[in-house]
Image (cartoon, rainbow, N blue to C red; front, side):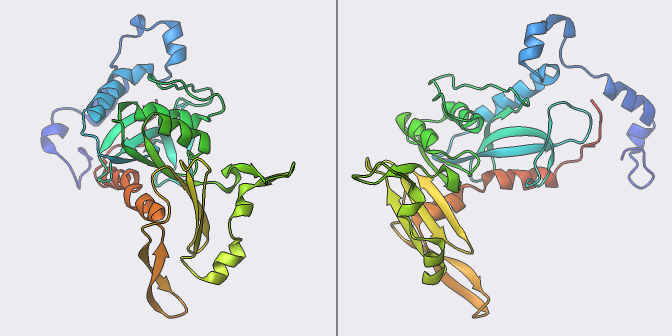
Length: 300
């Protein structure tokens, strides 16, 4: 960029050659290798850049916490050589370093942790994690360590599970998230020894589709702490929440192919809140994408 004819910056180009610049850049270090033990290197796969990562984490944690925040994965775009590099096809930048990130609805990052690859372990510093909780759930519990009691978090289906929601509620944190169908908990009918999937309590997909776009069904657990809403938009989705359920029922605007115009569709408040507050991570991705000038192809 600085040496190209179209974008040449003469002050830089006349001071240092491009090859010299790349040579210096490839030998930059932010830590003293002799001070890092073998044990520390095995525990922290990002030890070579840990001072920079720690500075970024510290800056994020100094940002003001909102009452409603989102937690999701983010990919730092990178296509060079790195053992911790991941490929997540559904992301705007599918190849790079995976980050578990917490952000507010305005796209301001509040906390983050780098994913170090297979075998990564993470635990909350304040509370023990349930034994059966998956890695995504453990990252959520770690990220909410810096949130005040009474906060609400929003997570996607790769994180949401009933054990996670129960654990968060014990810590005074409310949560809402889309739920995979196979994570809807099992239940047992009265006077029966046969176990049934809890989806059986909901109206079928065909019944909701017949009722029309925006139709819904809701099941509340016996202790009234968790509600699972099944909502039919273009397809059925499940949302589990310890914060909201159906009421107050709102509406959303959708395009109708049949009528060839926009129509108002019923929308449970749990769905509305999820759509409203979950977009902070995607917004941050767009902000970074518009202001990023780095070469992603640099080898480590």
